[in-house]
Length: 85
Image 1 (cartoon, helix red, strand yellow):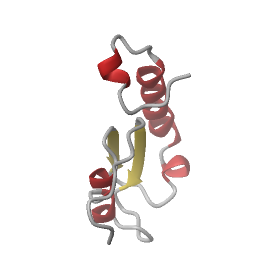
Image 2 (cartoon, one colour):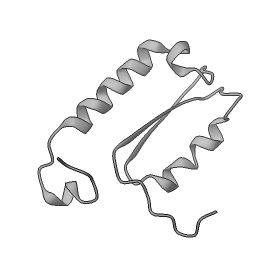
Image 3 (tube, helix red, strand yellow):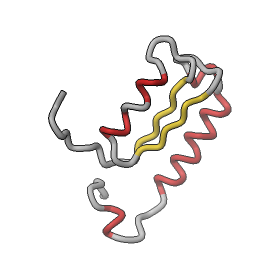
Image 4 (spheres, one colour):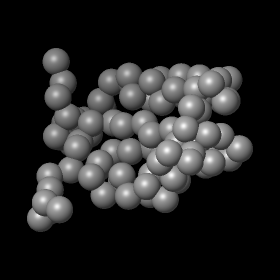
């Protein structure tokens, strides 16, 4: 592994199936070490294909995340490390 990798600094959403046989949920717990601003959702009774198994719940999670992520920064401190055009 890379020693002290720089963390990804953009808002990131991770939706993971709790019953994912291809990439078990324990793998999802490792992702935050590489992402500074991450929101993780592990869905129970859900396989690798979360968007097919639980479409309504996945859509709600995505909509809420996009709403929060699209709000303007109120300070330069909030924007630090993020690309803002």
